[in-house]
Image (cartoon, rainbow over all chains, first blue to last red; front, top):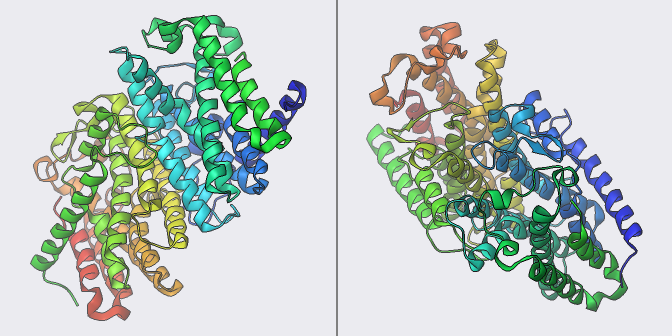
Length: 304
Length: 304
């Protein structure tokens, strides 16, 4: 039931271009209704933060999950763009001197280096805010009920009980290395929650049944676990040139990862198991889910 | 058509207590559906940032505007709490070393002093996110259509084209003092947008007519202008003890204000004019709008 790797990557790239075209338009000079002005430095910093050459994996999951269940592609692209704004805001804030203090992101200066720290903080804040604007806006052609469900799920995935909380746990982990349960909680919040949302969002956009919503959400959870394990493995096995950012940082910072705790062999086997679980969850959809299944493999096999 | 100052202040205090009880509950240890964990340090920092002894003027405007037009008080309190989360996040981020670098806020250590800088950034992010959660949640008993309209208006007021954009202009103003038009734009974004939203939100909660919505929004604009002028006047006429924060800072930083540009006398007359305009806008509602009219006077006459 897999799409060929080449066909998959072409589809991923096409979707990334569509998302980027949309993000570029959303962050152009043109003001929206009720905006008083778009200060150029802040708009430019947001644009720089978002149009950064990412793979757009999260929006891809939104779009493919929505399409699988018969959702509207235009609406899915807008929700995907909103989600990417949240993901990119988190990168901007995580890179700040007071957080991970990173100068490079995908081989380019981070926002606080390219602009300044205050602008980076505000660009992150504004991207986070804009995500909810994009979903709620009239241009997102969805019933109000779906918009409210999407906004609630996104806020829960991104906030105190999700991604931002995960970053707080991550900072605390530099002081006190967490145990295995602590690591899994941290990771399911910091990276898992948004990926889970991406897949669940597809079901919400499609107005799918509760069963489908639960299934897509479970699929998203598995993809999230696979994504994080692959990331932790790359941190010990890859080099900075391939990754476009510093590697070996988890270890030098004393951060606990499952790879450090259980070893590379265990982690690679566990990664395979997550991919297997993820594809099993898609079985009821047959060939229609080939692209999502290929995404599970892509997440596990990526080299950067 | 004015309420007595004592009756007004009692009403403002009662509302502040109700908002604080709600915020305290929203930021308690109890997890919401779909939250994975509530990391204690982040939750505590958010709680500290929000339960800070503020006057709760914005939530008060939400509640009183809603009540004037027949809106549900419970829903208005929740929207007010959400708005207060946004206001408080902006204070936390504005106080950061990379921004205004303030150690004190209402006489207490700012969040990055009481906790640390990374926690302050994340607490701000999480409060901003939580605002949209609070409005979208089932506990906010409003039609989905109203929730979407509220979320859109709040995001527009708080983001690039509103409050956050205003803070970017404010930082730029330290380098190049803006002209009068620039100052008015900056202030209408940085402080005006959320106050305008507060009043417009009341109309949205009440499901009021477009006419009422426009009228409340215009009222909010006038209150916003009055609020800012009063603030600028206090910065030159008050002292740090009364304000609970450093004063004279606008001048020492070379920031342009209308007071600096046009003088105290002009500003005081302009302030009276805004209050007059604001109360005139309420004329069609008669005595029912006495509390909102008193709020306009309160904003202009406040001593801190």
